[in-house]
Length: 386
Ligand code: GDP
Ligand code: MN
Image (cartoon, rainbow, N blue to C red; front, side, top):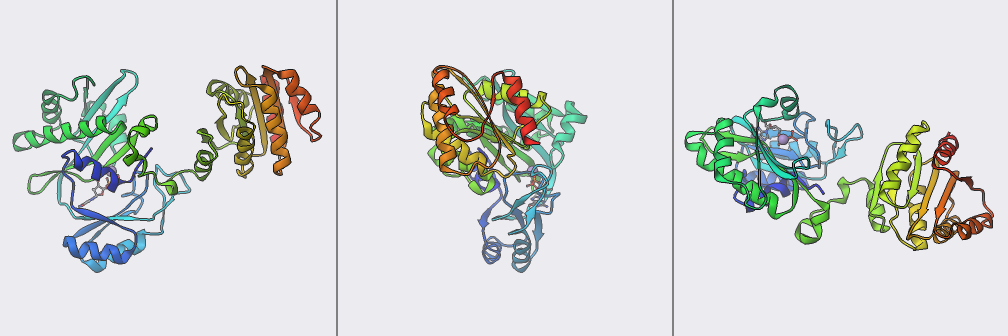
């Protein structure tokens, strides 16, 4: 799960990471008010769950409260397109109004989980700012790394090494190590998959400040952090994925193709997507209905897929292990009774109670395209989708 910059900064600051003074506003009048209270100059920053806002026109400097109001008026409601949003962009609902900072240097600091090493990894670079991906690709030697043993946490000597390597020496050394320790503690305490400060700046008067902040949380640990779960912003998520959650379908990912998939088991769902690609098609989604003997789960899957205008055919691929094929088949029948499906449906069933499932479908009285093998099912779905 992602959160906004202002929320990530709030969390980091609770762990001792210094941040600029500022507050979030959802109207331009509020933005003016905040600028008045903070004192000018300020910076007005679009709050969306994507980076690259500066280059996309979502960050404006203001020298007076009136300018802050005008900047907020331009940003709130705009469709902000950045290299991370895709061409459709995001509608901005809020801005962060912050004291303007005179930065002498822009650095990068981030913690991620390195799944290859199964360890948290702290990275620091003197080449921070807006193009860190480019730095990583072109001059990886400028990115300094420290792997963290989760049993002991981030060690001060690691902080000193990273600080020296990225040019934070002299009077900056001690605050840099403190800041890194704070960032790591926030990362560990909140079960983050990423906690990043880009840029981390050295100000003209020699202080370190997190000018931007980004946190991604591990969804599997959200149950331990109800305060974090409350920060979820459905406006920033794919509406179909939000609907899937509401329908109790937790394993749904919207994709860009036109074949809607209903599958039980994540592995089979992946294999089904591969088979569709092999047959020359593109899946519209990943969907694992799970191992459930619940007719309504199948009906809900149909609700979700029929709500997606890009779906031109539905492929149902079920292998009944603990799940029963007859229950799934009944779900397919119920779905057709409860809603207008409107697109061709290809069904492949195998496993537990398959004979009963076949009987239910053969008596259903509406057209279904039947397949025995997975390859055959995929080919027929691609053909049906046109
Ligand atoms: P991103 O583009 O979404 O990553 O947004 P950032 O918060 O990283 O801002 C992008 C750039 O805007 C930064 O690298 C800074 O150069 C600039 N910027 C952001 N806040 C301030 C500020 O308070 N003062 C000044 N002078 N520049 C800022
Ligand atoms: Mn940034």
